[in-house]
Amino acid sequence: MHPYISRFIFAGVGLALCSQAQAATVTGNINATLTLIASCQVNGGTGATGQDFGTLDFGSQEALFTTANAQVLGGAGGAMSILCSSGTIPAIKVSTGTNDNQSDGGSRALADGNGNYVPYDFYTDAGHTQLLAIDGVITLPTSTGVAQTVNLYGQAVGKPGLPAGVYTDTVAVELSF
Image (cartoon, rainbow, N blue to C red):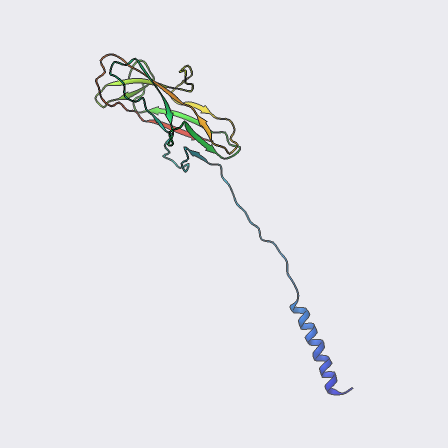
């Protein structure tokens, strides 16, 4: 065999082996994860502490009124809205107010800042028959991921001797889920 031919054969075999080594493949996986934690939104808010659960506005009444009724309204003017993760059971605790038990006729009170109080209470029905006591809890059905409406009503009771003025109260609310 001619020496050049054998060199070409060895070179060809070497190139063939190198090209096979470069064509090797390695397989594997990429692991992707996402952890979702349960969450809720109140009236379309972000779900952080300090949420606005709504406003109970009895409007303007004559100083000699007997009763005034109102509903807690959320940010968009409708009833309070709670949107929670699917599968959670939201519970709203309507806790203490600034002026609780300051006046006969209701467990809560609106104050004018001058020692005058208008008693009122929360109710879970428009007919004002289902009283929601201080620290009372409204448990909603298991969430399906769709916003749930929470109807909460208030009734203020007038009493003799109240001077004209603006009466207010701030009530703490806690949402657990």
